[in-house]
Length: 284
Length: 321
Image (cartoon, rainbow over all chains, first blue to last red; front, side):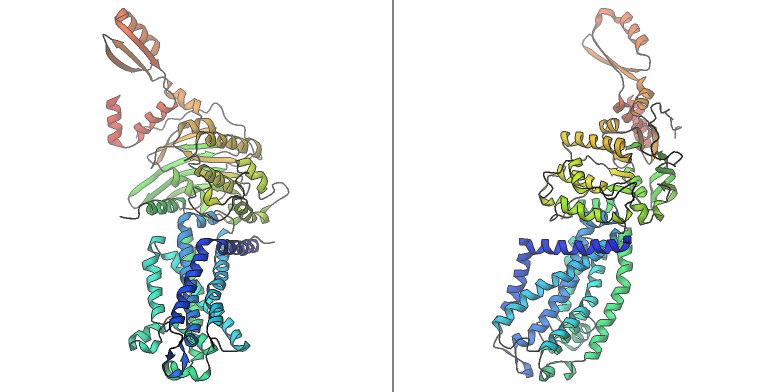
């Protein structure tokens, strides 16, 4: 077997191991619980509100968007955080010292983050289906479209999460470099609040980023056709949606390997040591 | 700068590995500069196959930089470097499979167990296994070799610092490397762990024929482990040789202390016997105490580091003497 293929197999093994460890970890269980409780609380308190002219109840309208928001958030911040952390703690350096180690590491990271999507979506989706009437009303076709959209959404966002984790100066800076911009973009992307409620220029900014389009795509798959009146231009804009997400995916797949290689080249024992020093000195 | 003293190496280790094979490591004119700050200013040395070589020097002398260049983690500013016959900057994955790196880890893989981590990392070496040299190292065997059998199924986050360092060593060895790099391997070891580690290094070198290059600022360690010691200070190798040869070099400079009329005197001399004879003849019964101390490796080391470190310090050191 070629060493490269063996490394990819090792990466899959790594991703699976880390995923199982994460499911067993009280820390991560707490995180999933938090996401679930907060999201369900928002839906619950708005369960009787009708959204604009669509005539839909808020949970029905918002759930597909929220799933899109969770996906983007998880797939940008998740790998970003992991990578920034593992650059500092020496995980990456260990892989750099292995034959074909970086291939294994990246495969592992992609596997882990993709798998992690499952619990973080299910923790919102399953209780919602039980608690609220009429959410996710589509049939089997809708679910299939959702699956396709999730895959496209992963391709459009995950490489950028890896880029973020590669360029952020340190894990302590993830808040300002990662969380803040991603939260801001998510906030204006029609996930929690319909995008029409924003000013025109904010709407324009939101439409540059994939979050809005993933939300739109999921709504188009799940909401009844008449709900389209709640969208910009009264259209699901399926063509532009596929185009924008496709463009982000292609750009990410071109940029991410280069940025990763550059970051990996700079890894050494001294950089890990320097990170350790920084971590011990939070205030400076 | 003074000419670098060359110490003849009387106790040369037997050449292991295939006859006629080149050195495991060959460094010539290695320079490393960050901007205007020169960390390494022309380093030359070899590590022969199967040899244990210790790079000894004070903090900031350039030990870590040297090791990182050899590991291929850092590009040198100038000079030629060969590790197992290959320039590390161009080393491919097959080359990487032949070397082991012991990293000072910190808190990586907290949720893994030593057994699982070693099994996982070992998997990368499977394609490089040959009938002559099987890869990777068998996990159970390796766990007992580094003394981690009891902790094999505990979460790594719960291991003590010393146990973690044993795991670091095991990780460096999992691919059964021909050449092993260790940067300050025993930092944070308790005395027992240190001794166990020293035994392990001897075993690796004797049984496996592994060539080993390690850095330390602990003299005792260098003396106990190394076939050859390289003293690196201020970005260059100022002396090299076996511990015995290095000590012999400055063994001449010994220290004579005595007390006369309740007053203490110290004198450094190369010729102990004539000096003490004169001292006794001159003062006789006035002497109430007399002590002669022959320089050991530590004195040698301190003397060399001071001599070569930075100009102002060197001046002071000479005045002090």
